[in-house]
Image (cartoon, rainbow, N blue to C red; front, side, top):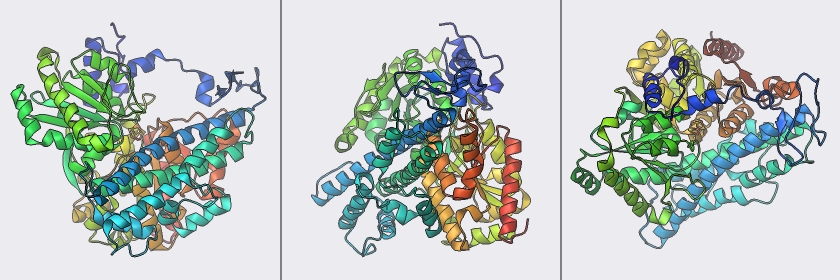
Length: 635
Ligand code: BF8
């Protein structure tokens, strides 16, 4: 297939490996997300403003932003309601994604307890007893420090399950366990305490149905409630994954497409849920599998990752990162991948098309996520070891089919230190937050910014992520983050000790003393919950509420519904959130004003939209200094 080349590849991505691979893909006639993005131009102006609606079959309807054409949909819906409904749809969509992920982990956790209690073999174990006891303690379970572990685990599972199935007006056990009093009171006053994870998504879908909620404020308030349900669903995923796989500690690895190997069987794990990918790594590292690989002529087996599954297996067991969202097709275009194994979320169906151009097997593994062109080998908790073995064997047997002349791997990769869970950060600080808080008070750390979120082909890949982070660290701001940002920062070398040299003088001294990079990799997107745990602890230690802290959140390249949900709950928790991509809300002045101004009066924070990373850094620094002054700290 002939592909129209991208005119200026450096305008699509700042990542050199990606630039090379986009051209390589063009040579091979492979279309990528960037080519499809170009073909899609111009994108629908109504859609970009949030002014189209397809929620019923009288539609689709669109509202004219210039008020020359229709100013209402066929049912009479106005621009404010139309835009607000779409925002709520995204939040519910994001909450459903994280909620399902967490639920699958909960089911596995419960199965693990059941099998262990019966003394039966099971692929998973309660690996981190200390973490389990700390979760139980937070949840208020009596004798959390001394109770027999399986008994305690069963009580934790029950408390968490209640947060899915509750039918009363009580709020989530996990919210009560993981929020500070000051915030809980704000949520209560606003009437946005979530009741159950399922119920808030259910209610959201009801409200956006034709002829239900037509008052934009009421719709968006439920958006906040659903986003908070999302927040604590993510907390469940993180916490239980730590129990099953261990709480991350600093660990070294590499990032970018150069982690693929010419002589190895390459397996790329992709998606979000580590339940299967961790098993694949375990099997691939076994002597039995390595021997099989040598028998087919490979030197060994190399597992690497894309997107948040990559972050999960990096943080826990040091698996290298092949790349973030916009690297998924490019990894396959190397022709060096024997199998791409996907679970769910952010897996573009296009990977099947690229795999088809080579010998690559695309393996889907989750019942909710099949892709035409993929081989489906379904994960089940009880047979996870066998499934992982089958997939690794499939990849090994595929190695001899690799066409060597078609293989091209860009020789580009960076070192990365990851694994900064809250527990690991505390350990680096000597077991207490005090040194961090003192550094903030002195101004050695001017503020803390969480940068998170996706890539989006609307903006150059990684540019916003990397430029914003560099600008802020140069101004003595410590950066923490997750998701595709974390992968961008890793690829750019910002997660190394060498990157300390990019920090401002005052921050650099702290980083050198603690032996940590200026950008701390805190994990996958569900691990944004770790950032919140840290913020709660800092606010508590200072005796203030989260909006009082010199902190900020940013998603410079936001793309998915999950990002909308996460951004909304960060704002609800009192953290201002910067977006580098304009969200589809400008069709309603009222909704735009609510999100970027009025929310501050309700929850103490708001959204800020600024595509230019330099200008965004100025806004963030100005906010940080304002908060420092309000706390009586030097600026
Ligand atoms: O959950 S950052 S593109 S991979 S949605 Fe997806 Fe966005 Fe990447 Fe992880 Ni998060």
